[in-house]
Image (cartoon, one colour):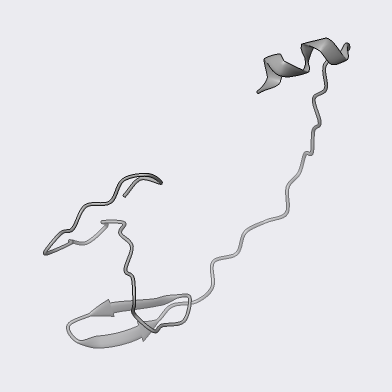
Length: 65
């Protein structure tokens, strides 16, 4: 699945990443063999570095887009 393109599939396998629409579930649930298994939340560390880049001259701002 891409942000501007979707494709219907009949089956997905282990390791496949896919999206489901219209299914009532909580984040972290996985579906297999007709049963739901709840997975632990994934820890995402805080950013170590934050950086802002600005052009020296305002007329060069359009080069950043």
